[in-house]
Length: 304
Image (cartoon, rainbow, N blue to C red; front, side, top):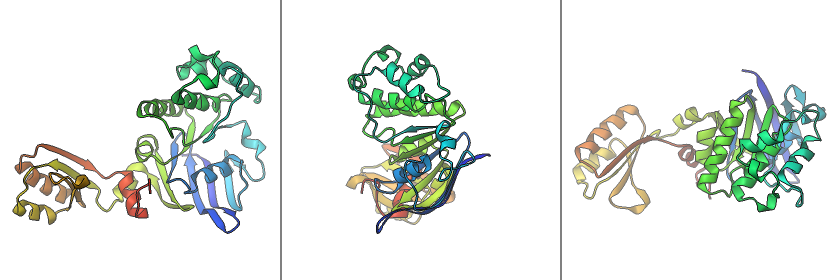
């Protein structure tokens, strides 16, 4: 696959603080690539250096066969950028803002079609201040699409949104990918990265701890298989058998709700047979998540 972004040994320092610490990665054409990590991990700084908004301390950045440090003008017409925090003219309507942004480029998309894409056509004569949080985020994303970019950069696009608005944004990002565009996004939502991204780089303290396709990253987990079940009374004999096959935990301290963390498919099948013999009130078989891997790699949850 063609690489549209290549980053090599990228470093950004602010005095004694190293915000981005010698990272390297690439992004393939047409994929959704995610930078996943807690606040302060270096995700936004990395994105802004690739976009040309911050100057690296050292390292190489190549975007669409252009050296960003030497030929920034080469990519400006070909990328779209949605910043973590956006501000728009208070007394321009949505259509007027998009028209203004479109005038900055030699190529731009139809304004009504963009607004229709995010169900905002009826709001074309409204001001940004009258929109809900989800509507503002959707508008912010189509504003980054006005020049029909080849690569779209989205920095924490769903932060602060309710679950329904977040799902709507996921649908929009999927739609953008289906148009053949490359999407690079930052997020600290594990589920979001797992659902949307083809590949993910997990960042911590300016470094990349792990990077791969999402399902392959999850397979690296120490315990890739899980079983959860509810059983009021669990005999000591069966509990001992389960502990020989898995790590057994009570979920959130509930004595009747159990989580089994299991290393191999064979052990998972054996443990499942034992649990089914108990006739539990509920039973769920699953796999590890990106959050499980993040905890293993960093020793903390992303909220910490």
